Length: 616
Image 1 (cartoon, rainbow, N blue to C red):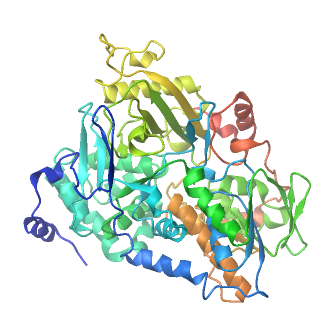
Image 2: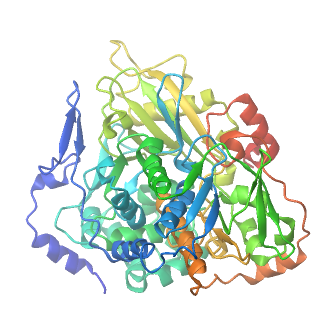
């Protein structure tokens, strides 16, 4: 179905909307709760939107329910399953396997669960998070999971809008406001049309036609764009250059931590297709506290209450195989052997590549992994000595250095502070591997924070004080001591985060089914229509559980994804060698993020020296 400008304007004309509905901070009378601080800033909880009335939600709800019905194993069909990795994908896989009557054990190498959503407390008791994680209405598997665990009340839904910092107007914001009662895709089109600060009407009209095939043809059209970068797509279809500066740079850095000239257009179109087709797809929520307690713990409780086991600090040393290539057992670093009926890898792609047994290495399925790698990103926590003029939402910075940020003292109940702000910011792109001009991964924490303070001072000149500790704030005033100074910070470097969704990579993402009879693959980087994200991780784990459950019942398995001819040729010519294995301990060794110690830096230089290459 085509949606033209005339149709959209008709909807607008026939809809009674108050003028203040387009203001940046529109009050909504149906909010569930408010939290005030002495400066008058309000933390608002909005009602959970209607997420269930979409085709995607209903389809994945049926898949969830099938684990307790058509995929349910009897006593004779029950399998012992070893899952390597305790991130969201591994935990989701275990959750659905126990629902299907199986006995999974999750083996997590680190002392914390969650993988890329892991968090830990510093010496002051403050939580340090691997990343700034936002939950979207268009996350149907994640929303089903919250419903199944009975934890929907842990999401703090924000008003339905997108907020952008105005680079050319420091200290000001502009918004895309989604008007209640307007259905998708009209609500998105209307939000863009009503914004008067980012694009002209002509530019908006010029942007729409290239996106219509996405609505008409759907995923088939989206998948065909994978060979094009966002910029390539724009120029091929005659989109205005300014949409890159105004929208796509922010979007690309938020989706995959890289700039539009490096990001596959399939990624942007996949996100836009969900947001354009679901009324509440772009509405955002924050978790009300730290991820280990508020998300991972309920998953563990569900698993263990039904006969599963979740182990931390239990790293795998080696995958030991039989002569026919099937897995014989897992060799743990502590010397113990793990034998199971089925095995699931829920490791990040960069770690899996180091663990592939020698007699698998000439199989085309595993050579696909060579085309995939994690993208570097840096997550910052910055505690200030007073309250900033924040908004209770995610903000798109539109900055060369920063992607998105939020004042967690305003957006999250556990981190609420009435007197001082704590910003959590995504620093991207941060490396030549991500298309950046500077290798920030190799810089010191102090250099990164100084650059960030300078950028914050530029974006918000009336908020940030000059501080001699941070030379980049030079030029800022603070005669009466009214401006904010940095009190404390934490720099979390993630050398290998979600897979780099550069053009041409999507075809190499492997299916969950593998050529190894007792191995299934999970992870957000495996083949599924969602991005490298929390939704992709949960969905990848769920699909892996479906494969294991169907195997146990002797059911027909999903077809394996076609492998590209170049990979088949590369596999035939590959010289197999003993797997490198994982060296060291902790987050950096196993593909996570950390505040790097000298020991961590030394390990990173040894196992991933490309992280220290400088831009050409």
